[in-house]
Length: 511
Ligand code: HXC
Image 1 (tube, rainbow, N blue to C red):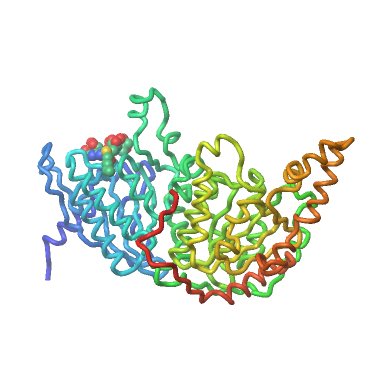
Image 2 (cartoon, rainbow, N blue to C red):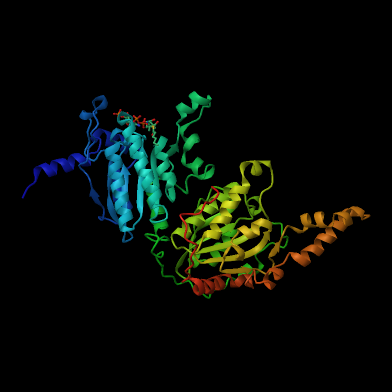
C-alpha cells in the first residue's frame, strides 16, 4: 500500500522551517532539532509524536505561516538502554518561538514522562514567547512551568541550552535539575537592547548571558560544553549516575576497583602547616571507584566541590570543602550550590558523602548584607532533611557553625569519621585565644609570645578529633589510607536505610 499524503506530510515536516533556513543553520555549524534528538538517543531509538500539530493563530497573517510540528520535535527514545522523553526546539520555525500548540506538545511529553516515571530532556533553542500569539504563549509557558514543578523530585529533568534562551523561556530550564550549556548558547531574562534602554549599560549577548557567565558567575548552569556533541556526552555521563525516578535506586556500575584498596599516599597528604591549602579533588579521586568523578558546577563557588562518583559500584553524591579556594570557607554561593545538590541527591536516593575541611563562614558586610544567615541555613536544612545514607569524613578543620552544617552527626549523618589531624572546635586556636585569654594576653610582658603559647595550649586541648570521638559525635578516628575501605564498609552497613519524617505538606526551607 502506498500512502502518498502521509509521505508528503512527513517529508514536509522534516524540513522544519524550510531548506533555506536549515542551510543557514548548517553554515553556522549548528545541528537541526531532528539531528539533535537522533544524537542524544541510542542509535535508531528515537520515536517522534505529534509531527502534524500546527498552531491556530490568525493574528498578523499567521494562518499563512503554519509549519507541521509547530517548531518543536517531541518524542521518546533510549539513553544507554533507559527510556527518556525529549522535546527539541526547532529554531528554523519562527525562531523556535513558543505558542500554545508548541507548548501543549511539550506538556504532553512532560506528562507522559511523569506517568511513566522516566527523565525528561529539553533541548532549548528559541526566541522565547511567540509574539504573534500574545497571551496564549505566556499561558503556554506557565503550563510548562507548572509541570516542571509537579515533576520536581519525581523524575530527573535536564535542560540542554543550544541556542538563544530568552525572556520567560529561561524559567523552565531554571526549574530543572541540571542545565548543560553549549558555548554558542545564551540565556537572559532581558536582552542587551532592553538592558541598554533601561539602564544605559552596553553589553554583548555573551557577556550578559553566555555559557561562561552562567557557569562562572551566576550559577544558573551546571555544565559547559565546547560544542553540541559535548552536551550529549555530558548528558549521558550524568544519566549513568541517576535513577529514572524517585522510587528507583540509581544504576549500579560494575567495577574492578578493589573495595579494600588502601590510599597510602593520603597518610602524608596534609601539609604540615594546618593553614596551607591542599587539593581536595585528589582525595576524592583517590577514594572513589576508578578515580571517576563528575564534578557539577565546576566553575562556580569553587570553595565547595559537588559532584557524582561511585563507591563499590554505588552512585554517590560528593560534597567537599575546597581548601584551595578561600580556604574552603562557606559563603553565600557555596551554600546555595551545595544545598541544591544535596536536595537533588536526596530526591533521587543517592547517598551523600561529605568531606569536611572548613574554617567557618566567610566574614564581612558583603556576606552578612547578602544574607549569609539565610543561605547558610539552607544548606543546614538540606543536610538535615536528607534521609538518604549520609557519611562524613573530617579531614582537617571543622570549626564553629560550619562543623554543624557540614553533615554533622547532629543533623542526622549516619557515619562520621575524622582523620587523626582533624580539628573540631568552636573556632580556630588564634581567634579562640584572643577571646578567652584576653586578660592574660593583655597583662603579659610579651603579649605576642603569650598569645602564641596560649593558642598552642588551646590547640592541644581542643583542636583534635578525640573530644568529639569521646562523645560519639565522631564514630571513629581513622587513618587517612583507610578512607575508601571505611566509607565502603559504612555504606554497605547503611545502604538499606529507610527514614521517615513527620507527615506535612512540605517544609519551609529558608530560600
Ligand atoms: C516570534 C520570533 C521570535 C519571537 C524570533 N522570531 N523570535 N518570532 N516571536 N519571540 C523569528 C524572527 O522574526 C525570524 O523570523 C526568525 O525567528 C529568526 O529570528 P532572527 O531575529 O532573524 O534570528 P537571529 O538574528 O539569530 O536572532 C535570534 C534572537 C532574536 C536573538 C533570538 O530573534 C530575538 O531577539 N528574538 C526575540 C527574543 C526575545 O526578546 N524574546 C522574549 C519574548 S518575551 P523570519 O520569518 O524573519 O525568519 C517572552 C516573555 C515570556 O519570552 C514570559 C513567559 C513567562
